[in-house]
Image (cartoon, rainbow, N blue to C red; front, side):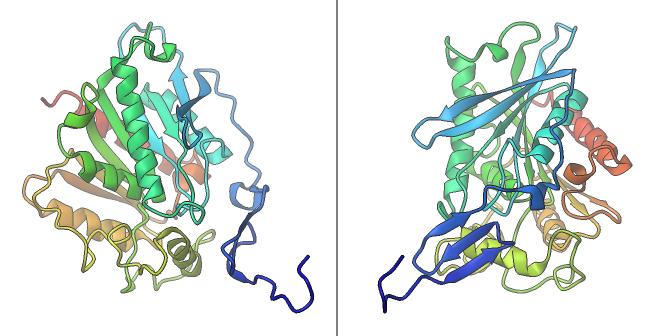
Length: 332
């Protein structure tokens, strides 16, 4: 307790009472995530095994591996999944992310790697991007090490030549960063070969509002919360036009000359972020040599596949992702 006359720190930013940034820089986090996860139980998926592993000891970062139980001896692809949460919330252990990864492993017959990354405002961007890069480097190390995790060996083994990166919300922004950071061919990651990127409701921003941002709020998301996420995650003093928020902002680097792997961008028709996702995909698609597709799910809100994994829309999404993976699995 401070002495008489000593000014007490005030709440500078408050995210749903679960995350508070005080005026002296102190960050207060609630241990309860029920408001976000809606008390969703962890699923028990008998066809998928999962376990946790450390992938970056200096920052004590963990990831969760999901491996389907198959009778086939064929090798299986790898799906790297980056969770959402506005760069401020989220973990591999949150029920809706965990359950979605179980479904990905089972439906796509893939080994799913779900890394955590450092969160803002304790660790502002580019910390999350750096951790995502470290996760792919860890995967590369598994491919070349004689002491790799045994889940990457045996039957069925995994095919490091067929790796796909999926990102949800802020994880979609991370996927964008990785796509342009490593470019086509992923030479730095060899023998790992990233074949494609899937951006699910990617979290992009900008100072100028879009029509969908000015539209009605979603059930779980509003414009005020999105703005708070950017104020908490971007470098202090940065605007929403910072290159890490707006890929096509006034100071963002040109993307035309960078060759990337095929990309699929998906958004819900009722998302506040829909227009940014659509504009991002169509601008890239106009650039020479870039294979980018955009799919919109009518009447769906942000994260519909996490919130209602058994819905028809979520099942259709899984089929679309599966087709995307099949279409680009054998390109030299």
